[in-house]
Length: 205
Image 1 (cartoon, rainbow, N blue to C red):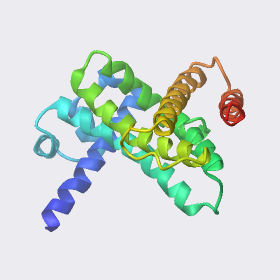
Image 2 (cartoon, rainbow, N blue to C red):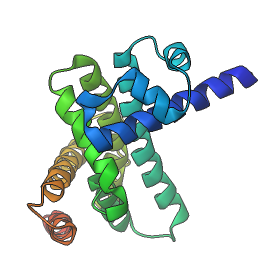
Image 3 (tube, helix red, strand yellow):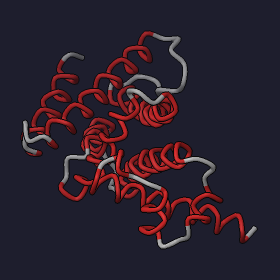
C-alpha cells in the first residue's frame, strides 16, 4: 500500500511539473527530460509513472480539471449558507479563472484546449472534465430555479432547460477566460459580463 500511495503522489508531482513548463514555454516545449528536471526525479521515474508522453500530458490535463472542480466544491462547502443562485455565481467565477492568482492555471488550461483540437486523447480528457463541472452546474441551476436536482437524466423539461443553461454558462466562462488572457477584456469587465448573464437568467424565469 505505501508504494501505491507514493506512486500516485509522484504522478501528481510530475503533473505539476508539466503544468509549470506549459505555463512558461507552451505545450510544444514540454519534454520528458525537462519534466524530470523540474519535478526533481529521474527520467526513469517519469517513464515508470507514464508509459508515453501522451499519457503524461493526459494525466496533467485531468489533474488541472480536478483541481478546478475540487476548488469549487471546497468553496461551496466552506462558505456560509447561501442561495443556489449565489453559489452558481461563485462556481462561474471559479471556472472562468478570472482572478489573478489563477491566471497561470488559465494559460495552462487554454494551452491544453488548443492542443485537444487536434489530439483525440486530450479531447476525451477534456470532455470528462467538462462533464463533471456540467453536472454540478446543472444541479445549481435547477435548485436556483426551484426545480428538482440536476441529476444525470434529461427526462423532464426543467432538467433539460437547466442542462442547456449550464452548458451556456460554461461556454461563456471559457470564452471569458480567453478574452481576459489576450487582454480583450479586463477581469473586472469579464465578471460584469458573468453577473449580467446570471441576472438575465433569473429575470427570464
